[in-house]
Image (cartoon, rainbow, N blue to C red):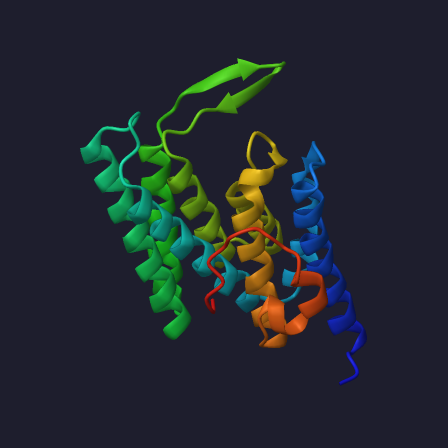
Length: 216
């Protein structure tokens, strides 16, 4: 099947992410997470794509929370609250996808305000700029996922969400591989209705990273 110009451009973006996985596996260091900026163009003029992506990553975050359990540095009651908030946020996103309404968006905006309170107000000067030290990285990802639904600049928030989900220590590292593959898998299935292995069999044949590649 001959690809359209848009499909060919999308395939090139996804292949670059797979190549990034291979670069990491070969030991290349300091791979910038800005390689994910192409997500902005995938979402351009496609609010529904950004919403599906936000919901997909939010669900992955919750799945990982359930699998790993409560971190040592987080009080258990606090962690349970975060898990509940993320579950509630996912339900709001699902409800909106099923029935897009003004009230649905308002409910998500209300949740964003609640998340802002939960994250606290720990702001510090770091290298001549003010940095907000949030209490939960998982809640931060939910924040970005919700903004894929309610913010006009949804391509930017889809990128920020992918970046927050994938990056480790401000770069793409070996620890990032499963998450980067999940991002690539989402866009492959969303745009081509095929898995990475089905769409790019040769390219994926020697990829060793483990990821949950179930349908988004």
